[in-house]
Image (tube, rainbow, N blue to C red; front, side, top):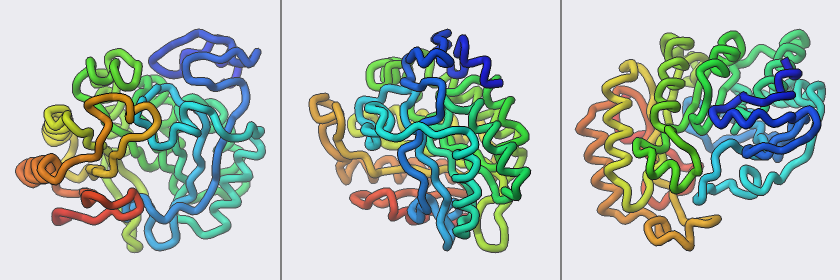
Length: 296
């Protein structure tokens, strides 16, 4: 499977770059896996982190170029170190040994081939906890199909309903059409949500959306699509943690946090849509402080 990196078309950009010769495409990924951090993360949504934490592996580089990325040193500047597939499989096992609820693959898209091989090795050595695919949503359906036997929980973003905004702030075309098709493919794979006796998700789909200042219509359209197209048991996570970082400080519409008025307007709309499962982050709180705002 790794040989396909000779002409990489793993993500919708389809650069065709020969990554096996360490030529670099738009994503910044080369032939080897590069990770910035592997740790126990206790500050995801409650059904992901649980009581013992989520075993997160933060992959370096990204196929989006978000001007407001809060992890820009990892995603845009490529901070991290290269490791082998064998080392990646050992990382999964070491996290499992620490008692985490799951393995959380953060920004994994550009390393899917290597991740699949690492999971194969790790499973042969006893990896048995759920695997979470934590993605920006800019995926190919063919890539999601490859993951069918490997991923238990899909955790995609749905950032934009407007492709003009996606192009302006993340440098990609047709984000909404591409992301929504892949989210429906993820839903088709997992079929239904399964929450275990500890309250953590063993199987299922949770879709995240970050509210941007000045773009409430974007958030409303995204939420409306979720309500009309996703199963009732799907979890949604509405994030209010936006703050201007990276290049956003110099962008007029993005150079501030959300106002209380903006927050309340989206909160009211979420309640109107009457989602069954999910989380709404309180305004002013950091990402580790998720609180449920409606009944499950």
